[in-house]
Length: 196
Length: 223
Image (cartoon, rainbow over all chains, first blue to last red; front, side):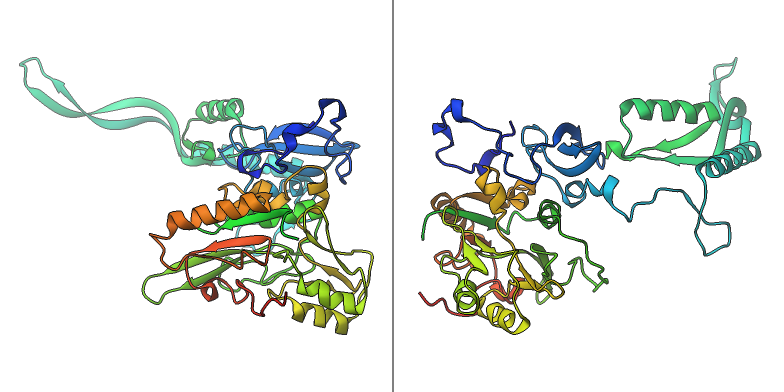
């Protein structure tokens, strides 16, 4: 049974007088009645508001804030409130779109083509910008005790040509895998929005 | 009818996230609208048969820039003038829920353009809208379906700052008076909008005209 009370939004002043034997499913008379309720987390930002996803026949039909979630107590912002559109909106993109260099047109492409293209581009950029070593100034004490400054070459095995940003939709484990992949390619500039 | 339910909207706590506006669309399954950018963040431009709740943005830069947020919706008057006008045309187009006091349009009844215009003009807040093709009237119904199952209205539930509150009319009036007394020292112009005539009460901190032309009743209530 879903509870409606969340702090100041207590509906009935006499709600405590309800006989527990007569308590029915409060959502019985609503258009969402009989749907399967799955408790989930809003994927958009790092607040992580609780969401109840109502589904029927494997399809999401309605999403709303979870009043029992201690983080959000049932509240949602405009983006979170429109969560069911994430799967149901006819405006949603279902295929990648590609804009060729210099072109003003977006065209729909297949996932296989897009992923191959991304892989080629990453490989090309990485090969072109990969550095095995990098020079840096260091200060050391010489044999006579005086400090001397000189340039030293370090092994770095990195690329400065690629930056990875994203995503707020990733969880901790996915972020771990992503940064592992980025490090294995030698990418040093990466960040995601989940911590902001 | 003076008991029943009320909504109290404290505009000093509103951050205009528009969660209420979207939650209303989601629960009532209202279709989106194609809109154009008018140079501010208000979207869509006005209430419609598909937008029953709208966060209005307005600015004033006379001395220093002030930004006003006004979450517009049906006020659910205690003695709704729209119902009075509608009853003369077609009985039952607008009904008032006995338990909660919510003013509800009847989705099964059609109404012609001329009658509708009279009903809209009777509203002191310019709320009723009509779907021209189906000739069905539409405006906020306080989510009376949710209320009858013990759930708060969708907009109130979604409010993340606590600016919108829902409860018995007595409790909401008390909360409104308490909050007004709290901020009166800081905002000398603070006022409650027509608390004795309507169920959706706003707490404003400036001239109501700054928020919206119809923030307070533009026609006197005849009791």
